[in-house]
Length: 259
Image 1: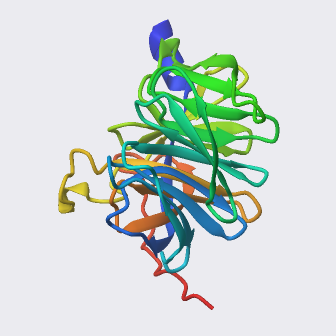
Image 2: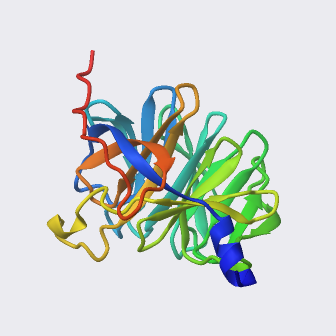
Protein backbone atom coordinates (compact mmCIF):
# COMPACT_ATOMS: atom_id res chain seq x y z
CA UNK A 1 0.00 0.00 0.00
CA UNK A 2 1.43 3.46 -0.89
CA UNK A 3 2.36 5.58 2.11
CA UNK A 4 -0.11 8.32 1.16
CA UNK A 5 -2.96 5.81 1.02
CA UNK A 6 -1.93 4.35 4.37
CA UNK A 7 -1.98 7.83 5.93
CA UNK A 8 -5.43 8.48 4.49
CA UNK A 9 -6.77 5.24 5.93
CA UNK A 10 -5.32 6.11 9.33
CA UNK A 11 -7.92 8.86 9.90
CA UNK A 12 -11.27 7.26 10.80
CA UNK A 13 -14.55 8.59 9.45
CA UNK A 14 -17.69 8.48 11.58
CA UNK A 15 -21.31 8.43 10.59
CA UNK A 16 -24.23 9.38 12.80
CA UNK A 17 -27.61 8.48 14.19
CA UNK A 18 -30.25 11.14 14.85
CA UNK A 19 -31.34 10.86 18.48
CA UNK A 20 -33.74 13.83 18.65
CA UNK A 21 -34.79 16.74 16.49
CA UNK A 22 -35.58 20.10 18.06
CA UNK A 23 -37.12 23.23 16.49
CA UNK A 24 -34.81 26.04 15.42
CA UNK A 25 -35.62 29.54 14.17
CA UNK A 26 -35.27 29.32 10.37
CA UNK A 27 -34.39 33.01 10.20
CA UNK A 28 -31.32 32.46 12.42
CA UNK A 29 -28.17 32.57 10.28
CA UNK A 30 -26.16 30.55 12.77
CA UNK A 31 -22.55 31.61 13.26
CA UNK A 32 -21.89 30.49 16.85
CA UNK A 33 -23.46 27.93 19.16
CA UNK A 34 -22.84 26.42 22.58
CA UNK A 35 -24.82 24.69 25.34
CA UNK A 36 -24.69 25.74 28.97
CA UNK A 37 -26.90 25.09 32.00
CA UNK A 38 -29.80 23.71 30.02
CA UNK A 39 -29.89 26.29 27.23
CA UNK A 40 -28.41 26.89 23.82
CA UNK A 41 -26.58 30.16 23.25
CA UNK A 42 -26.47 31.27 19.64
CA UNK A 43 -24.89 34.03 17.57
CA UNK A 44 -26.51 34.97 14.27
CA UNK A 45 -24.87 36.80 11.39
CA UNK A 46 -25.76 39.37 8.76
CA UNK A 47 -25.09 43.08 8.46
CA UNK A 48 -27.83 44.90 10.32
CA UNK A 49 -29.43 41.72 11.62
CA UNK A 50 -26.83 40.01 13.81
CA UNK A 51 -27.79 38.98 17.33
CA UNK A 52 -26.91 36.92 20.37
CA UNK A 53 -29.58 34.66 21.81
CA UNK A 54 -30.39 32.39 24.72
CA UNK A 55 -32.62 29.63 23.39
CA UNK A 56 -34.77 26.97 25.03
CA UNK A 57 -33.59 23.72 23.45
CA UNK A 58 -36.84 21.78 23.65
CA UNK A 59 -39.01 24.42 21.98
CA UNK A 60 -36.61 26.69 20.09
CA UNK A 61 -38.08 29.65 21.99
CA UNK A 62 -35.75 32.63 22.33
CA UNK A 63 -35.51 33.44 26.05
CA UNK A 64 -33.25 36.47 25.70
CA UNK A 65 -31.89 38.34 22.70
CA UNK A 66 -29.62 41.32 22.11
CA UNK A 67 -28.95 42.96 18.76
CA UNK A 68 -25.36 43.45 17.61
CA UNK A 69 -24.45 46.99 16.47
CA UNK A 70 -25.69 47.29 12.89
CA UNK A 71 -22.31 47.82 11.28
CA UNK A 72 -21.04 44.45 12.55
CA UNK A 73 -21.51 40.95 11.14
CA UNK A 74 -21.78 38.69 14.19
CA UNK A 75 -19.72 35.51 14.30
CA UNK A 76 -18.67 32.92 16.92
CA UNK A 77 -19.42 33.06 20.64
CA UNK A 78 -18.17 31.45 23.83
CA UNK A 79 -18.70 31.93 27.56
CA UNK A 80 -16.04 32.51 30.17
CA UNK A 81 -17.21 32.93 33.73
CA UNK A 82 -19.95 35.54 33.65
CA UNK A 83 -18.91 36.89 30.25
CA UNK A 84 -20.17 36.05 26.78
CA UNK A 85 -17.57 36.78 24.11
CA UNK A 86 -18.46 37.32 20.45
CA UNK A 87 -16.39 37.79 17.30
CA UNK A 88 -17.26 39.88 14.27
CA UNK A 89 -16.38 38.84 10.76
CA UNK A 90 -14.15 41.46 9.11
CA UNK A 91 -14.09 44.37 11.54
CA UNK A 92 -11.27 43.03 13.77
CA UNK A 93 -13.47 43.77 16.79
CA UNK A 94 -14.73 41.42 19.47
CA UNK A 95 -17.64 42.19 21.79
CA UNK A 96 -17.97 41.16 25.44
CA UNK A 97 -21.35 40.95 27.19
CA UNK A 98 -22.66 39.96 30.58
CA UNK A 99 -23.76 36.34 30.15
CA UNK A 100 -26.87 36.76 32.30
CA UNK A 101 -28.18 40.08 30.97
CA UNK A 102 -26.52 40.42 27.54
CA UNK A 103 -25.45 43.91 28.54
CA UNK A 104 -22.43 45.04 26.53
CA UNK A 105 -19.37 45.58 28.74
CA UNK A 106 -16.32 46.09 26.49
CA UNK A 107 -14.64 45.46 23.15
CA UNK A 108 -11.30 44.00 22.10
CA UNK A 109 -9.36 43.83 18.86
CA UNK A 110 -7.63 41.09 16.86
CA UNK A 111 -5.96 40.63 13.51
CA UNK A 112 -7.58 38.80 10.64
CA UNK A 113 -11.15 37.66 10.34
CA UNK A 114 -13.25 36.29 13.18
CA UNK A 115 -15.11 33.03 12.57
CA UNK A 116 -15.64 30.94 15.71
CA UNK A 117 -14.78 30.37 19.36
CA UNK A 118 -14.71 27.51 21.85
CA UNK A 119 -12.96 26.82 25.15
CA UNK A 120 -11.57 24.29 27.57
CA UNK A 121 -10.98 24.98 31.26
CA UNK A 122 -7.82 27.00 30.60
CA UNK A 123 -7.93 28.55 27.13
CA UNK A 124 -10.17 30.00 24.45
CA UNK A 125 -9.70 28.81 20.85
CA UNK A 126 -10.50 30.95 17.80
CA UNK A 127 -10.87 30.12 14.11
CA UNK A 128 -10.50 32.60 11.26
CA UNK A 129 -11.06 30.47 8.16
CA UNK A 130 -7.38 29.56 7.82
CA UNK A 131 -5.71 26.31 8.93
CA UNK A 132 -4.59 28.08 12.11
CA UNK A 133 -6.49 28.06 15.39
CA UNK A 134 -5.50 30.89 17.71
CA UNK A 135 -5.19 30.17 21.42
CA UNK A 136 -6.37 33.13 23.51
CA UNK A 137 -5.75 34.12 27.10
CA UNK A 138 -9.28 34.15 28.61
CA UNK A 139 -8.61 37.29 30.67
CA UNK A 140 -6.83 39.50 28.14
CA UNK A 141 -8.13 37.79 24.97
CA UNK A 142 -4.63 38.16 23.54
CA UNK A 143 -3.21 35.43 21.30
CA UNK A 144 -0.76 33.24 23.21
CA UNK A 145 -0.05 30.52 20.63
CA UNK A 146 -1.17 29.04 17.32
CA UNK A 147 -2.35 25.51 16.48
CA UNK A 148 -1.67 24.61 12.84
CA UNK A 149 -4.32 22.11 11.75
CA UNK A 150 -3.40 19.34 9.30
CA UNK A 151 -5.00 16.23 7.90
CA UNK A 152 -2.69 13.69 6.34
CA UNK A 153 0.10 16.29 6.61
CA UNK A 154 -1.90 18.81 4.55
CA UNK A 155 -3.28 22.10 5.93
CA UNK A 156 -7.03 22.03 6.60
CA UNK A 157 -8.69 25.28 5.54
CA UNK A 158 -12.15 26.75 6.17
CA UNK A 159 -12.20 25.80 9.85
CA UNK A 160 -15.44 27.34 11.02
CA UNK A 161 -17.73 26.83 14.04
CA UNK A 162 -15.90 25.13 16.92
CA UNK A 163 -16.76 23.03 19.97
CA UNK A 164 -14.64 21.41 22.67
CA UNK A 165 -15.72 17.75 23.02
CA UNK A 166 -13.93 15.30 25.31
CA UNK A 167 -10.50 16.78 24.77
CA UNK A 168 -10.83 17.30 21.01
CA UNK A 169 -11.80 20.42 19.09
CA UNK A 170 -14.64 19.77 16.67
CA UNK A 171 -14.68 22.14 13.67
CA UNK A 172 -17.24 22.54 10.91
CA UNK A 173 -15.50 22.66 7.54
CA UNK A 174 -17.28 25.53 5.82
CA UNK A 175 -19.36 24.65 2.73
CA UNK A 176 -19.13 20.91 3.46
CA UNK A 177 -21.08 18.38 5.51
CA UNK A 178 -17.96 17.38 7.42
CA UNK A 179 -16.73 18.07 10.93
CA UNK A 180 -13.05 17.64 11.78
CA UNK A 181 -12.02 16.19 15.14
CA UNK A 182 -8.77 17.95 15.99
CA UNK A 183 -6.17 17.02 18.59
CA UNK A 184 -5.32 20.42 20.14
CA UNK A 185 -1.87 19.21 21.25
CA UNK A 186 -0.68 18.34 17.75
CA UNK A 187 -3.16 20.05 15.44
CA UNK A 188 -3.72 16.75 13.65
CA UNK A 189 -7.17 15.76 12.45
CA UNK A 190 -7.84 12.50 14.28
CA UNK A 191 -11.28 11.86 12.82
CA UNK A 192 -13.81 13.05 10.27
CA UNK A 193 -17.55 13.15 10.96
CA UNK A 194 -19.62 12.80 7.78
CA UNK A 195 -23.06 14.40 8.17
CA UNK A 196 -24.13 13.90 4.59
CA UNK A 197 -27.91 13.43 4.40
CA UNK A 198 -28.67 15.03 7.77
CA UNK A 199 -30.78 17.79 6.23
CA UNK A 200 -31.77 18.62 2.65
CA UNK A 201 -30.57 22.21 2.20
CA UNK A 202 -32.15 22.37 -1.27
CA UNK A 203 -35.43 23.08 0.56
CA UNK A 204 -34.00 26.35 1.90
CA UNK A 205 -34.19 29.76 0.17
CA UNK A 206 -30.39 30.03 -0.27
CA UNK A 207 -28.97 26.49 -0.23
CA UNK A 208 -25.52 27.66 -1.35
CA UNK A 209 -25.07 29.66 1.85
CA UNK A 210 -27.46 27.97 4.29
CA UNK A 211 -24.94 25.26 5.12
CA UNK A 212 -24.11 23.09 8.11
CA UNK A 213 -22.69 25.33 10.83
CA UNK A 214 -23.16 25.03 14.57
CA UNK A 215 -21.91 22.48 17.10
CA UNK A 216 -22.85 22.36 20.78
CA UNK A 217 -22.02 19.78 23.45
CA UNK A 218 -23.78 18.98 26.70
CA UNK A 219 -20.90 17.47 28.68
CA UNK A 220 -23.06 16.54 31.68
CA UNK A 221 -25.35 14.31 29.64
CA UNK A 222 -22.94 13.52 26.78
CA UNK A 223 -25.19 15.01 24.09
CA UNK A 224 -23.94 16.42 20.80
CA UNK A 225 -26.04 18.97 18.88
CA UNK A 226 -25.59 20.28 15.34
CA UNK A 227 -27.48 22.69 13.11
CA UNK A 228 -26.96 24.96 10.13
CA UNK A 229 -27.54 28.48 8.90
CA UNK A 230 -31.31 29.06 8.67
CA UNK A 231 -32.07 25.41 9.34
CA UNK A 232 -35.48 24.72 10.92
CA UNK A 233 -34.04 22.08 13.25
CA UNK A 234 -31.28 21.41 15.76
CA UNK A 235 -30.28 17.75 15.64
CA UNK A 236 -29.01 15.74 18.57
CA UNK A 237 -26.76 13.09 17.04
CA UNK A 238 -24.76 10.08 18.14
CA UNK A 239 -21.57 9.16 16.29
CA UNK A 240 -21.39 5.70 14.74
CA UNK A 241 -18.79 3.68 12.83
CA UNK A 242 -18.96 4.57 9.15
CA UNK A 243 -21.12 2.25 7.05
CA UNK A 244 -20.75 1.69 3.32
CA UNK A 245 -22.35 4.47 1.32
CA UNK A 246 -24.33 7.06 3.22
CA UNK A 247 -24.00 7.28 6.99
CA UNK A 248 -26.62 5.42 8.98
CA UNK A 249 -29.63 7.53 9.98
CA UNK A 250 -31.96 6.41 12.73
CA UNK A 251 -35.64 7.45 12.34
CA UNK A 252 -36.05 10.88 13.88
CA UNK A 253 -37.73 11.18 17.25
CA UNK A 254 -39.88 14.29 17.76
CA UNK A 255 -38.61 16.79 20.29
CA UNK A 256 -39.72 16.08 23.83
CA UNK A 257 -42.38 18.53 25.03
CA UNK A 258 -41.25 21.19 27.48
CA UNK A 259 -42.30 21.01 31.07
